[in-house]
Amino acid sequence: MKVKIADKVGVVRVFCISADLAALCTEAAMQCIREKMDVIDIEDDTIDAEVLDSMAVSNENFATALGISNPSALRETVVE
Image (cartoon, rainbow, N blue to C red; front, top):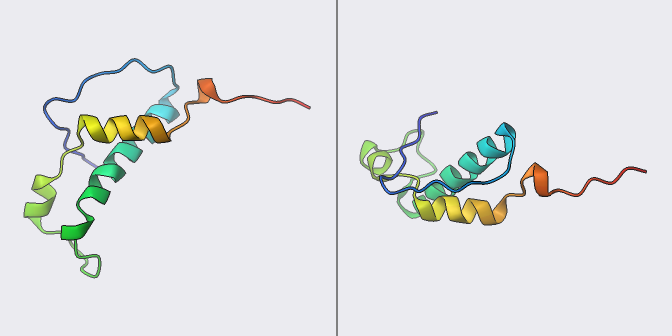
């Protein structure tokens, strides 16, 4: 899946593994899609090219995803 990234997305250093990074990017892309749900016809099998072209994952999408996600390094491990 190709996702268009907005021009002004900054880089933030986060201690995570590659699976955490993949989950972060997926959540940011989902945030972008959720913002456009009012113009996407979910009954249709395709999405208009104009709508797809207008979608780009932004810094705000990544910031929201960072707030939702839980990186592996920050999870507590309990061994019994």
